[in-house]
Length: 270
Ligand SMILES: Cc1cc2nc3c(=O)[nH]c(=O)nc-3n(C[C@H](O)[C@H](O)[C@H](O)COP(=O)(O)OP(=O)(O)OC[C@H]3O[C@@H](n4cnc5c(N)ncnc54)[C@H](O)[C@@H]3O)c2cc1C
Image (cartoon, rainbow, N blue to C red; front, side):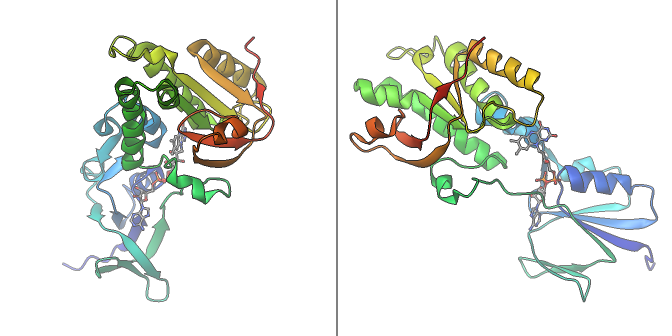
């Protein structure tokens, strides 16, 4: 039987795409939701996967099962590579295509390095499960490497974690690393004391959590201080690179990598 309902194609199964599909559950339309991944990702908790507090499956749910009970919605797995608005056509990377009457683009955003795209090689963004697993791998490996080395400088470097950016994700991540180092792992190593780690949070503005009320930012800074995070505000990172002998002395930051900084001021822990 010919289906004469309007065809709504939604690209993206994130919060935006799923909410749009659900909002049209009772509308006289047929919906095709396309995503290149088979899962909807709860990005706000990615930092907990990156710091080994949650497993990837805890924050990723199959899009197909989310929309299983919605009879007017079909889910397709596919990477959209092009859109032809004249032909009302969505093109897939594998050569297939679908036609639409109405198109919703809910493809999300990419992370930004504020004009320093070259920093991505040192620190991946945090947008996908793969990003989170890579950060978790690097974090846990640092403790393992510290355990195996006899070199005090190398050990200190491995146990120095620098988070650049005191927005919500930076604050959460720094706090979670501190919890791992100062609470979770304290009894699990023999050669190193994980609680000797340094967790440093750098923020260019005069306070962390710039988009939140001052009172909350002060409270968060105090809680981070209590957790053992060294919060430094008014510090702009201008360069990041691998450490070479003496370079860190000049550049004033510890770790296997070092950052060139302008003015460093410690956040007062009231
Ligand atoms: C680490 C982190 C913490 C956050 N914390 C919070 C928080 O505490 N509170 C809050 O309100 N917000 C938070 N956010 C922001 C919030 O998660 C995003 O605003 C929200 O996920 C955006 O939803 P979206 O649907 O626009 O995009 P997304 O959730 O990114 O979804 C986009 C979808 O489109 C798909 N897609 C993209 N391109 C294509 C293509 N070419 N073909 C097929 N599919 C494609 C992707 O696979 C993805 O599934 C956080 C974000 C991050 C990264």
